[in-house]
Length: 377
Image 1: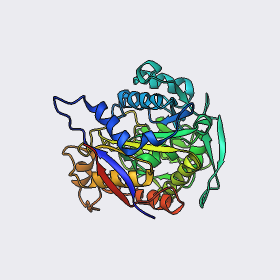
Image 2: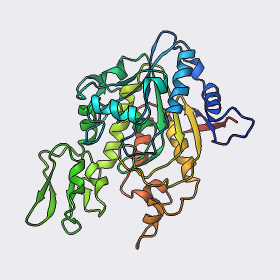
Image 3: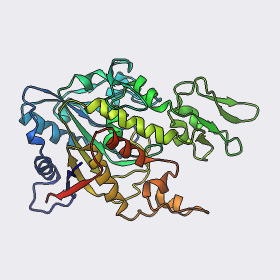
Image 4: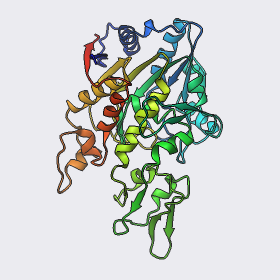
């Protein structure tokens, strides 16, 4: 397979420029967004609206610029995301829309409708076959995503407690899965609690939507109800004392492969285009109500028709930078017994297997990890 083209612009602008949104438009035009036939077609712009309390998600200005460009090409854009599997402010369409609006994503600010793709309760999905699927043969995708004629992902690049990082494939595969689809992807492993490390704070219970955690009032310790646990991993990220971990050590590898397969289901057979902004690189997903300080400096804007090459280019750009001081990453690196993996995302979350997603995505035919980086000034 030949190298895919990935286009890049940094965030630098001078006093005589028209600003970052103008530079963003220039990048997307250079990357070929104008080659897509959008005339009269519904165009899904998949992005993350941010959990309430999180301030690392992409500003609505980026979405507005993209939506305006789609309309200039005759397209009918809408911003979209699917409901979450865990508690929070995005678990049903009413709360999800309220969250989006409160974070600045309204039809007025972004210039197009905002639609929750899997409906009121996260049950409005379509079963889609997965070409070349190995772990799964079909995916449950939000109906509005699959009804669109053209698919565009607008991604915020950041860390993730299980996937290693959240980029294009994570935004597409996990993000476009309905609540049932998210269960399918997470169901490959279930966590356990180390009682010696458990402090009994019950912080993890606030993240569990399925009664998968049980607190013993006598011992003041938590345990996992494996019958009800769906393996979503939210409790793992919620524990400040490393008391919760997956017992299936292949869980993160398998999760990443399933994310790739769900991405294939979303993209297969229709025009698609992908944009990633590498800024505010928080150690956690935008699904968290907190985001912590960025672990790395802002890098820039990337765009490509190939989401695999795009993710690889963004990772490489991040790995080429030095960690920022006083962050989750440098805290991890200063712990006794730290073993440097020479990988910022592995050093942030040592048990993640982010490479598995890109390897599997390439294997099943989504794209290639080989890329040519083209700088747009």
